Image (cartoon, rainbow, N blue to C red):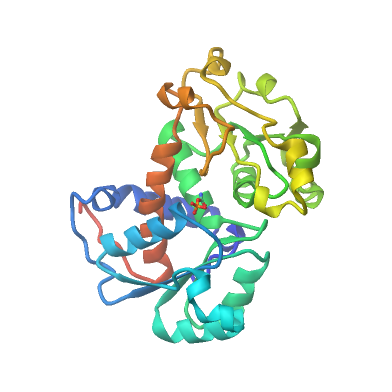
Length: 310
Ligand code: CP
């Protein structure tokens, strides 16, 4: 495998292979075992937009496997402020590292970087485009909870227009024959071309603005933040902010094994009282970012994980 830009870069078999590898690497991700498979390898973390989980879990994943990391750091303290282009930055970091994790505000930037670099690019989020490594940890979390990925009822709720996590996740879940329910306020619906694309491939999709009516049939309720930073102006954001606020009492009639997920950070869309319910899974989900990125780094760097028990 070279770069991971969208979920189209992974076949279903490869997805299962990565999830299996991630499962195996759990003791390493927890720090219970040391397995320096990536010793001598360097990851370049280039984050042109804020991040806590993606940046830190890539870094943790690399270090747990004995590798090293170089960071661009804040854009304000880099040569980007002197006018350096993304192309030049990528060409240079290409020579410093073995693999690059890139987050960029511009949709398509990750593909552009992959076309410019020799080393593999892991797309850590490109504008409102895609976030495939997030999808892999989401799939890992769903499989952990339900023992499978197929034939589940998945509710994706919130900002489906600008939320890149749900764009990548919808594409992936459709491939596993899940029923997808897209719940959003009117102005934040899933992009029409994405819906049309999935429907043309036989996807079973329902679109609604009724969050609470969608919960009881769900196996997974995937909440998302309204992406304030992508709105053209503050007024437009104010019209939809606070549209959905999930509370523990909203889950009273939910299926016993239904899980609530969220890529995080959350603002006000999940009340803190949900954290204590058996349904909350978002902090485990964030931890799963380490183990799935460990498995992805091995795959992208063509490093084999030993067979048998670690
Ligand atoms: N889920 C996610 O992408 O979080 P960060 O923005 O903190 O990386």
